[in-house]
Amino acid sequence: MKLREFAHSRTGDKGNTLNVSVICYDERDYAHLLMHVTEERVKAHLSDVVHGDVTRYTLPLISAMNFVLRDALGGGVTRSLALDAHGKSLSSALLDLEIPERE
Image (cartoon, rainbow, N blue to C red; front, side, top):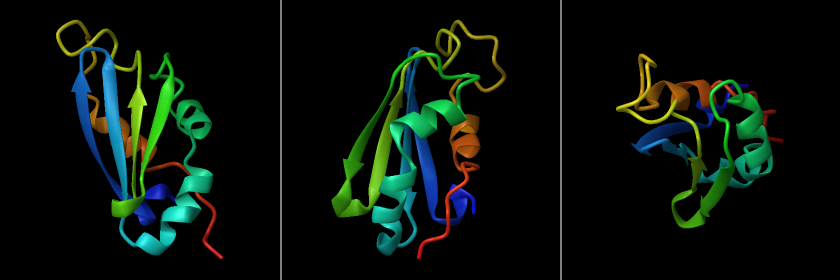
């Protein structure tokens, strides 16, 4: 299954750093996603674009996670030649992450 079947996403950027929030549709899926949407998996999944550290912050009261992706925007919005220098397409790419079905 794709992550997008469990959650939606929002993004924000500042310079060359991108924030991607992953918000569960159903709070019952939160523990499952915590196990499978790790810093290591996010970095590996977006390795073509994210060249710095990935830090995950958990937000259990709203069944969400926020990932801070450093060195992820080709130098930042004003320096990058990327078509989507703000990184919104990266949230869609992250939602393509394969997640096993919840038991």
